[in-house]
Image (cartoon, rainbow, N blue to C red):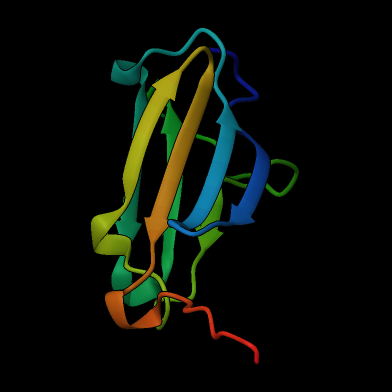
Length: 100
């Protein structure tokens, strides 16, 4: 793994919840560790067992735990991209309202 990885390249709120994409070229799933602390409202991403939590490239991501459920975080890696999804709490899922 490259020493400047993982690098956050995209984050967005989707119908599933919060979606994050990290660049992790050359890293397999055995080289990546995603951990979370609900009481501190964040998750962090490590690669190759080295933490990348410096000021120039932070990988400590704060999450609104009133709206999103860190205990159900989902992660997958494919083609050098790590996808992390933090789903909504069931009662926090946005609902559409029909306009008449």
